[in-house]
Amino acid sequence: MANKETISRVPTNIITGFLGVGKTTAIRKLLTNKPREERWAVLVNEFGEVGIDSNLFKENTDSQDGITISQVPGGCMCCTNGLPIQMALSLLLAKSKPHRLLIEPTGLGHPKEVLTMLSRDYYREVLDVRATLSLVDARKLQDTRYTNNDTFNQQLEVAEVIIANKSDLYEPDDFPALLDYVEKKFSTDTKLIYQVQHGALDIDWLAASASDKNLVSPKENTSKELPSTLPPNLEAPLDGFISAENSGEGFFSKGWIFNADMQFKIDKLLSLVHGVEAERLKGVFVTNQGFIALNKVDSMVTQLNLNELNDSRIEVISGRIDTLEGIEEELLTCLA
Image (cartoon, rainbow, N blue to C red; front, side, top):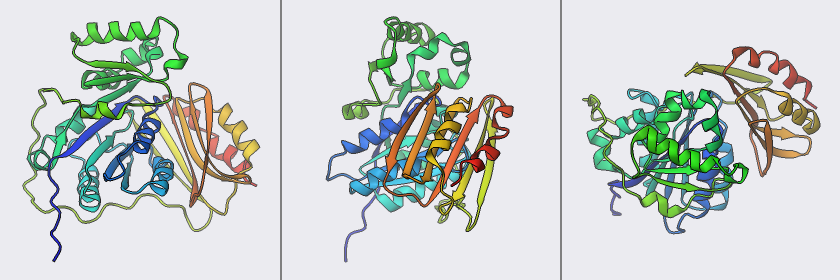
């Protein structure tokens, strides 16, 4: 009889950062550098309800062995007592038995809540929590909407490694301003701070040690029984489309899932995406020219070709709820 593999002290990193900073791209690039003989697991939490990132990671899982992705939509990861995230994590560990675990909280989530959850006695035995990596766009330090935002600052505060992403877009003073901000804001010069382009993280940064963050110990769950099922994620209807909304931390989101039979005209779709004014837009689409992913941050739209999709999904996040009005009608005009 084969020995049952024990899950113990799995090296674990939280990779955090504000909306649109490039967390998913960075993790995808880390996965391409995964040692072939290792199994890695990734737990992803999105603020929106429809769940899009798993479609992007599918390009990694299709081309590489030993990668397991679990997605929890709805921004519930950063609630210390949030049952869905604890269930998802337990099931992911049991299924993949990974050599390394990466956790990507929503860009609007407080990472201290995740770290507090991982400090529970059960997870201390199962996980070896290493450095928290926080991606940041140094240009945002010029905007008080970011520097006055508690989540933005907490993501920098808890990080042992800070990555100034999108450095190819910086002005000469942007990175020095980040160094000065971190030193003055957090009274520390012990954080490792690097500049990268296009989310190109060094896999060796994952090995950095975690510091003592003086977290408040959570109340332990007296139940020893691990959950066996998760609430189902939203799926495309057999016909037509569905939508879902979420709000929190001063932001509003609305997402749509379209049946795969509903193809989008790519020219009209691109015109719509370019015209939407929101902090964040991302989606995966079945179009008349194939499968694509679209991402919009800071008025810049990027396109990625995909191999396969089971449906079309789009999520829009904005600090103003009125920005989301009328998008559904415009999406319907883009259908072939």
